[in-house]
Length: 93
Image (cartoon, rainbow, N blue to C red):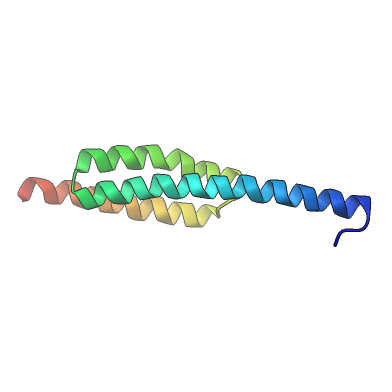
């Protein structure tokens, strides 16, 4: 339990940051889910658009300190590859 004024303030700040970061992570996961759903549907145009919308959100997560830069880079790279594969697989199907 916080006793000093400083520790009480730090506890309040921690709760506020936790709530903000939780909302940011939730928003990022929503955008990622939209990309996954578009990939699952097989529609390349929708998947590409969803990925285009998700990239700034992921980068914002990096700049706000919610996610590590390499993690976001890896996620974007893997999703972009899956969208590209979907694009090449669609015409031949």
